[in-house]
Length: 91
Image (cartoon, rainbow, N blue to C red; front, side, top):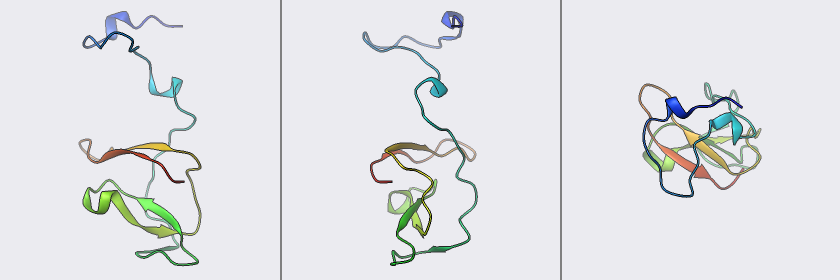
């Protein structure tokens, strides 16, 4: 394991520990452009939510037919500055 002591930017509360995101995540990926098949409204063919980096509607952009996330996930906007962030409870 690499020592990161000289990279720590500030103190954290007792009981917390510094780590790198890949060490605590199953998968990291960029959302990219909207899917080919999508709907602004939930339908029988498009029932999987699509989240964007917008703050409107809690980031819900619309719905698609194919899931990419299959467990509770952390969503972080990475376009420009960090925007809307939250934990997604439904896949």
